[in-house]
Length: 289
Ligand code: MN
Ligand code: MN
Image (spheres, helix red, strand yellow):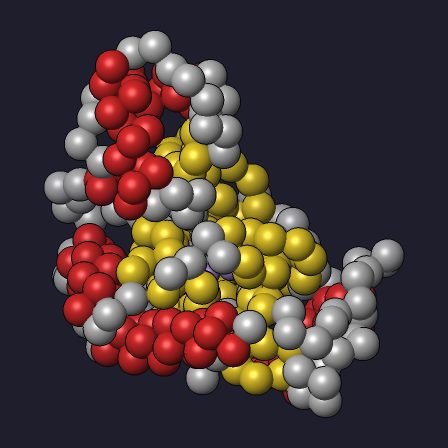
């Protein structure tokens, strides 16, 4: 238990440092992939590993966007940029996100950031996730925006980024009571749209969901590589040197799953802020602060 906490805290310390260094790189004209690769490389340099591909989602894209290899896209004037990254040490994960403003989204970003802080102030053993969702919703609405209701915070377990319980970003009924020692990510999204995301037909992130025998040799080799490097953690298409046909075969057979880009369905701009915390008896210990 002590080792788990120490590794989670160390991963959080490294992650926070790297994300804030990367923040200064986000400027008009800079290639998006440059920032993603900076974060992924620096996490390793400091002694942790990426827990998932660095997500850089812009404007109405809310989550699951990571550059493809040889991605030429650059940040544009006016962009609302979300950087969501994770680091792990021996599977103990820290997960955090910030928003960077290249336009005029100060209040939209503040709504997400303040709602995380209000939630963290409330968290301790015995608190129900409905109460957390309620304060997130109230805080975001106090700025005149809406929470994205179908994106949630989550528990973190060794090598599992999205573990129970879900932490809703609105007062969802039938919540779960938090217990001492739980590691959870609080992750609200605020928007000036209707408050819902849907899949966009674009996918650069995958993870292993069901390890079972496969026939094709390149598929077997790919699975061995995934088990060695990522286990059940998400990985980027650009990290893997295999043919598209091998990837789609494994998705079709239910061995790996894909994470399509999630965008606000009405085209609203989306801001995000995220911290990982450890639930303690009387408070929450912020791992990424
Ligand atoms: Mn995250
Ligand atoms: Mn998260």
